[in-house]
Length: 328
Image (cartoon, rainbow, N blue to C red; front, side):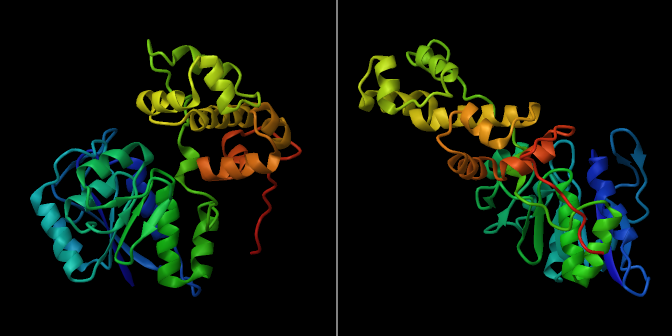
Protein backbone atom coordinates (compact mmCIF):
# COMPACT_ATOMS: atom_id res chain seq x y z
CA UNK A 1 0.00 0.00 0.00
CA UNK A 2 1.29 3.48 -0.93
CA UNK A 3 2.33 5.33 2.24
CA UNK A 4 1.54 9.06 2.44
CA UNK A 5 2.90 11.30 5.21
CA UNK A 6 1.35 14.71 5.79
CA UNK A 7 3.69 17.04 7.67
CA UNK A 8 1.97 19.46 10.04
CA UNK A 9 4.11 22.33 11.33
CA UNK A 10 3.12 25.17 13.66
CA UNK A 11 0.56 27.56 12.15
CA UNK A 12 -0.45 24.94 9.59
CA UNK A 13 -3.44 26.01 7.50
CA UNK A 14 -6.29 23.63 8.46
CA UNK A 15 -7.78 23.55 4.95
CA UNK A 16 -4.44 22.55 3.42
CA UNK A 17 -3.98 19.90 6.10
CA UNK A 18 -7.46 18.42 5.70
CA UNK A 19 -7.38 18.19 1.88
CA UNK A 20 -4.89 15.29 1.52
CA UNK A 21 -6.32 13.58 4.59
CA UNK A 22 -9.82 13.50 3.11
CA UNK A 23 -8.78 12.66 -0.44
CA UNK A 24 -6.25 9.90 0.23
CA UNK A 25 -8.15 8.17 3.05
CA UNK A 26 -11.26 7.88 0.86
CA UNK A 27 -9.51 6.63 -2.29
CA UNK A 28 -10.29 3.02 -3.16
CA UNK A 29 -8.85 0.60 -5.67
CA UNK A 30 -11.20 -1.19 -8.11
CA UNK A 31 -11.49 -4.18 -5.74
CA UNK A 32 -12.50 -1.90 -2.86
CA UNK A 33 -9.21 -1.93 -0.97
CA UNK A 34 -7.77 1.30 0.39
CA UNK A 35 -5.25 2.78 -2.01
CA UNK A 36 -3.20 4.68 0.59
CA UNK A 37 -1.97 4.43 4.16
CA UNK A 38 -1.81 7.92 5.64
CA UNK A 39 0.12 9.30 8.60
CA UNK A 40 0.08 12.77 10.13
CA UNK A 41 3.58 13.74 11.20
CA UNK A 42 4.94 16.65 13.21
CA UNK A 43 8.23 18.06 14.42
CA UNK A 44 6.75 18.66 17.89
CA UNK A 45 4.32 16.86 20.18
CA UNK A 46 1.68 19.55 19.66
CA UNK A 47 1.05 21.76 16.65
CA UNK A 48 -0.71 25.12 16.70
CA UNK A 49 -3.28 25.01 13.89
CA UNK A 50 -4.87 28.34 14.72
CA UNK A 51 -8.43 27.35 15.61
CA UNK A 52 -7.28 24.17 17.35
CA UNK A 53 -4.21 22.32 18.64
CA UNK A 54 -3.11 19.15 16.89
CA UNK A 55 -1.19 16.22 18.36
CA UNK A 56 0.43 14.41 15.42
CA UNK A 57 0.61 10.65 16.07
CA UNK A 58 3.96 10.36 14.26
CA UNK A 59 7.20 12.32 14.35
CA UNK A 60 9.72 13.23 11.67
CA UNK A 61 11.17 9.72 11.60
CA UNK A 62 8.01 8.51 9.85
CA UNK A 63 8.88 10.64 6.82
CA UNK A 64 11.64 8.18 5.94
CA UNK A 65 9.03 5.42 5.58
CA UNK A 66 6.72 7.35 3.25
CA UNK A 67 6.39 6.97 -0.49
CA UNK A 68 4.92 10.47 -0.73
CA UNK A 69 5.21 13.44 1.63
CA UNK A 70 2.62 16.25 1.53
CA UNK A 71 3.55 19.71 2.84
CA UNK A 72 0.48 21.80 3.73
CA UNK A 73 0.94 25.56 3.86
CA UNK A 74 1.53 27.59 7.01
CA UNK A 75 -0.03 30.94 7.89
CA UNK A 76 3.32 32.75 7.77
CA UNK A 77 5.26 31.57 4.71
CA UNK A 78 8.27 33.66 5.74
CA UNK A 79 8.63 31.93 9.13
CA UNK A 80 11.90 30.00 9.56
CA UNK A 81 11.69 26.23 9.13
CA UNK A 82 13.36 24.10 11.83
CA UNK A 83 16.61 22.63 10.54
CA UNK A 84 15.62 19.13 11.63
CA UNK A 85 12.56 19.37 9.34
CA UNK A 86 14.69 20.42 6.38
CA UNK A 87 17.18 17.64 7.04
CA UNK A 88 14.40 15.04 7.25
CA UNK A 89 12.95 16.21 3.92
CA UNK A 90 16.35 16.22 2.22
CA UNK A 91 17.05 12.70 3.48
CA UNK A 92 13.68 11.48 2.24
CA UNK A 93 14.30 13.07 -1.17
CA UNK A 94 17.73 11.45 -1.40
CA UNK A 95 16.00 8.09 -0.89
CA UNK A 96 13.62 8.81 -3.78
CA UNK A 97 10.54 9.90 -1.82
CA UNK A 98 8.08 12.05 -3.75
CA UNK A 99 7.40 15.39 -2.06
CA UNK A 100 4.47 17.67 -2.89
CA UNK A 101 3.42 21.01 -1.42
CA UNK A 102 0.03 22.66 -1.10
CA UNK A 103 -0.32 26.46 -1.19
CA UNK A 104 2.40 28.14 0.89
CA UNK A 105 3.87 24.73 1.65
CA UNK A 106 6.04 25.54 -1.36
CA UNK A 107 8.10 27.76 0.96
CA UNK A 108 8.92 24.73 3.13
CA UNK A 109 10.00 22.71 0.11
CA UNK A 110 11.92 25.69 -1.30
CA UNK A 111 13.86 26.09 1.96
CA UNK A 112 15.35 22.61 1.49
CA UNK A 113 16.95 23.67 -1.80
CA UNK A 114 15.24 20.76 -3.56
CA UNK A 115 13.30 23.10 -5.87
CA UNK A 116 16.40 24.95 -7.10
CA UNK A 117 16.50 24.92 -10.88
CA UNK A 118 12.91 23.67 -11.05
CA UNK A 119 9.62 25.29 -11.99
CA UNK A 120 7.18 25.75 -9.09
CA UNK A 121 4.07 27.57 -8.00
CA UNK A 122 2.26 28.64 -4.83
CA UNK A 123 -0.78 30.73 -3.92
CA UNK A 124 -0.85 33.77 -6.20
CA UNK A 125 -0.50 36.09 -3.20
CA UNK A 126 2.87 34.50 -2.43
CA UNK A 127 4.42 34.02 -5.86
CA UNK A 128 6.34 37.30 -5.80
CA UNK A 129 7.74 36.55 -2.34
CA UNK A 130 8.70 33.01 -3.35
CA UNK A 131 10.53 34.31 -6.42
CA UNK A 132 12.31 37.00 -4.38
CA UNK A 133 13.42 34.66 -1.58
CA UNK A 134 14.43 31.81 -3.86
CA UNK A 135 15.69 33.26 -7.16
CA UNK A 136 16.93 29.86 -8.38
CA UNK A 137 13.33 28.63 -8.60
CA UNK A 138 11.32 29.36 -11.76
CA UNK A 139 8.07 30.57 -10.19
CA UNK A 140 4.98 30.23 -12.39
CA UNK A 141 2.04 32.21 -10.96
CA UNK A 142 -0.47 31.15 -13.62
CA UNK A 143 -0.92 27.41 -13.01
CA UNK A 144 -2.83 25.24 -10.56
CA UNK A 145 0.07 22.87 -9.97
CA UNK A 146 3.52 21.94 -11.31
CA UNK A 147 4.74 18.36 -11.62
CA UNK A 148 8.53 18.00 -11.80
CA UNK A 149 8.42 14.25 -11.28
CA UNK A 150 9.75 13.84 -7.74
CA UNK A 151 8.79 17.32 -6.58
CA UNK A 152 5.36 18.88 -7.07
CA UNK A 153 3.87 22.21 -5.99
CA UNK A 154 0.33 23.56 -6.10
CA UNK A 155 -1.39 26.91 -5.85
CA UNK A 156 -3.73 27.93 -3.04
CA UNK A 157 -6.63 26.17 -1.34
CA UNK A 158 -8.67 24.16 -3.87
CA UNK A 159 -5.61 23.69 -6.12
CA UNK A 160 -4.36 21.30 -3.44
CA UNK A 161 -7.31 19.09 -4.34
CA UNK A 162 -6.31 19.25 -8.01
CA UNK A 163 -2.81 18.17 -7.02
CA UNK A 164 -4.02 15.25 -4.90
CA UNK A 165 -6.21 13.95 -7.72
CA UNK A 166 -3.25 14.28 -10.09
CA UNK A 167 -1.12 12.19 -7.73
CA UNK A 168 -3.81 9.50 -7.55
CA UNK A 169 -3.96 9.38 -11.34
CA UNK A 170 -0.17 8.99 -11.48
CA UNK A 171 -0.26 6.19 -8.91
CA UNK A 172 -3.37 4.24 -9.89
CA UNK A 173 -4.67 5.50 -13.22
CA UNK A 174 -7.56 7.64 -14.39
CA UNK A 175 -10.37 5.31 -13.29
CA UNK A 176 -9.36 5.40 -9.62
CA UNK A 177 -8.67 9.14 -9.82
CA UNK A 178 -12.06 9.78 -11.45
CA UNK A 179 -13.79 7.88 -8.65
CA UNK A 180 -11.91 9.97 -6.06
CA UNK A 181 -12.91 13.12 -7.94
CA UNK A 182 -16.59 12.12 -7.88
CA UNK A 183 -16.40 11.54 -4.12
CA UNK A 184 -14.95 15.05 -3.79
CA UNK A 185 -17.60 16.49 -6.16
CA UNK A 186 -14.71 17.80 -8.18
CA UNK A 187 -13.79 17.60 -11.88
CA UNK A 188 -10.71 15.47 -12.49
CA UNK A 189 -9.26 18.34 -14.54
CA UNK A 190 -10.15 22.02 -14.36
CA UNK A 191 -9.80 24.46 -17.22
CA UNK A 192 -7.41 27.36 -16.83
CA UNK A 193 -4.91 28.20 -14.13
CA UNK A 194 -4.88 30.28 -11.00
CA UNK A 195 -4.68 33.44 -13.10
CA UNK A 196 -8.46 33.26 -13.23
CA UNK A 197 -8.57 33.78 -9.45
CA UNK A 198 -6.33 36.85 -9.41
CA UNK A 199 -8.18 40.11 -8.90
CA UNK A 200 -7.16 42.40 -11.74
CA UNK A 201 -7.70 45.77 -10.09
CA UNK A 202 -8.03 48.96 -12.04
CA UNK A 203 -4.51 50.06 -12.99
CA UNK A 204 -3.21 52.43 -10.32
CA UNK A 205 -3.25 56.13 -11.06
CA UNK A 206 -0.03 57.80 -9.86
CA UNK A 207 -1.30 60.60 -7.62
CA UNK A 208 -0.01 64.03 -8.55
CA UNK A 209 1.73 62.83 -11.68
CA UNK A 210 1.43 64.61 -15.01
CA UNK A 211 -0.44 61.56 -16.28
CA UNK A 212 -3.17 61.59 -13.62
CA UNK A 213 -5.73 63.59 -15.66
CA UNK A 214 -5.31 61.51 -18.80
CA UNK A 215 -5.43 58.24 -16.87
CA UNK A 216 -8.72 59.19 -15.32
CA UNK A 217 -10.02 60.23 -18.74
CA UNK A 218 -8.96 56.85 -20.14
CA UNK A 219 -10.84 55.04 -17.36
CA UNK A 220 -13.98 57.04 -18.04
CA UNK A 221 -13.74 56.45 -21.80
CA UNK A 222 -12.30 52.94 -21.92
CA UNK A 223 -15.31 51.61 -23.84
CA UNK A 224 -14.58 53.95 -26.73
CA UNK A 225 -12.31 53.14 -29.67
CA UNK A 226 -9.30 55.06 -28.36
CA UNK A 227 -6.08 55.19 -30.34
CA UNK A 228 -2.60 56.14 -29.23
CA UNK A 229 -3.02 59.45 -31.10
CA UNK A 230 -6.29 60.13 -29.22
CA UNK A 231 -4.59 59.58 -25.87
CA UNK A 232 -1.56 61.69 -26.84
CA UNK A 233 -3.81 64.54 -27.98
CA UNK A 234 -5.73 64.43 -24.72
CA UNK A 235 -2.46 64.46 -22.75
CA UNK A 236 -1.04 67.29 -24.88
CA UNK A 237 2.07 65.26 -25.73
CA UNK A 238 3.62 63.58 -28.72
CA UNK A 239 3.10 59.85 -28.89
CA UNK A 240 6.81 59.33 -28.25
CA UNK A 241 6.74 61.44 -25.08
CA UNK A 242 3.50 59.80 -23.96
CA UNK A 243 5.01 56.32 -24.28
CA UNK A 244 8.10 57.38 -22.34
CA UNK A 245 6.04 58.95 -19.51
CA UNK A 246 3.86 55.84 -19.27
CA UNK A 247 6.90 53.59 -19.00
CA UNK A 248 8.36 55.81 -16.28
CA UNK A 249 5.20 56.26 -14.21
CA UNK A 250 3.14 53.09 -14.75
CA UNK A 251 5.65 50.52 -16.06
CA UNK A 252 3.35 49.97 -19.01
CA UNK A 253 2.42 51.44 -22.38
CA UNK A 254 -0.76 53.52 -22.85
CA UNK A 255 -2.51 50.77 -24.79
CA UNK A 256 -1.50 48.05 -22.30
CA UNK A 257 -2.82 50.21 -19.49
CA UNK A 258 -6.08 50.71 -21.39
CA UNK A 259 -6.35 46.97 -21.99
CA UNK A 260 -6.09 46.20 -18.28
CA UNK A 261 -8.87 48.68 -17.60
CA UNK A 262 -11.09 47.01 -20.19
CA UNK A 263 -10.38 43.52 -18.87
CA UNK A 264 -11.29 44.55 -15.32
CA UNK A 265 -14.51 46.14 -16.57
CA UNK A 266 -15.32 42.91 -18.40
CA UNK A 267 -14.66 40.88 -15.22
CA UNK A 268 -17.01 43.15 -13.30
CA UNK A 269 -19.77 42.74 -15.89
CA UNK A 270 -19.32 38.97 -16.02
CA UNK A 271 -19.58 38.79 -12.23
CA UNK A 272 -22.56 41.11 -11.78
CA UNK A 273 -24.76 40.94 -14.89
CA UNK A 274 -26.42 38.35 -17.10
CA UNK A 275 -25.47 40.21 -20.28
CA UNK A 276 -24.35 37.93 -23.13
CA UNK A 277 -20.59 37.77 -23.62
CA UNK A 278 -20.87 39.47 -27.03
CA UNK A 279 -22.57 42.44 -25.42
CA UNK A 280 -19.97 42.62 -22.66
CA UNK A 281 -17.25 42.67 -25.30
CA UNK A 282 -18.78 45.84 -26.72
CA UNK A 283 -19.46 47.40 -23.31
CA UNK A 284 -15.85 46.87 -22.26
CA UNK A 285 -14.48 48.45 -25.43
CA UNK A 286 -13.30 45.47 -27.46
CA UNK A 287 -13.61 45.63 -31.24
CA UNK A 288 -15.13 42.19 -31.67
CA UNK A 289 -16.33 39.28 -29.50
CA UNK A 290 -13.60 37.07 -30.98
CA UNK A 291 -10.87 39.57 -30.09
CA UNK A 292 -12.36 39.93 -26.60
CA UNK A 293 -12.42 36.18 -25.94
CA UNK A 294 -8.85 35.78 -27.15
CA UNK A 295 -7.52 38.69 -25.10
CA UNK A 296 -9.49 37.72 -21.99
CA UNK A 297 -8.12 34.17 -22.16
CA UNK A 298 -4.54 35.45 -22.46
CA UNK A 299 -4.82 37.92 -19.58
CA UNK A 300 -7.08 36.09 -17.11
CA UNK A 301 -6.11 32.52 -17.96
CA UNK A 302 -9.58 31.22 -18.76
CA UNK A 303 -12.51 31.98 -21.07
CA UNK A 304 -15.19 34.57 -20.25
CA UNK A 305 -17.80 31.80 -19.98
CA UNK A 306 -15.73 29.75 -17.56
CA UNK A 307 -14.90 32.85 -15.52
CA UNK A 308 -18.60 33.66 -15.24
CA UNK A 309 -19.45 30.10 -14.23
CA UNK A 310 -16.87 30.28 -11.44
CA UNK A 311 -17.55 33.79 -10.14
CA UNK A 312 -21.17 34.61 -10.87
CA UNK A 313 -23.32 31.97 -9.14
CA UNK A 314 -26.96 32.55 -9.89
CA UNK A 315 -26.26 34.56 -13.07
CA UNK A 316 -27.59 32.57 -16.00
CA UNK A 317 -26.87 34.21 -19.31
CA UNK A 318 -27.93 32.63 -22.56
CA UNK A 319 -24.25 32.79 -23.53
CA UNK A 320 -23.01 31.15 -20.34
CA UNK A 321 -21.32 27.78 -20.05
CA UNK A 322 -23.40 24.63 -19.66
CA UNK A 323 -21.74 21.96 -17.54
CA UNK A 324 -22.99 18.41 -18.00
CA UNK A 325 -22.08 15.39 -15.89
CA UNK A 326 -19.51 13.12 -17.47
CA UNK A 327 -19.86 9.39 -18.02
CA UNK A 328 -19.90 7.17 -14.97
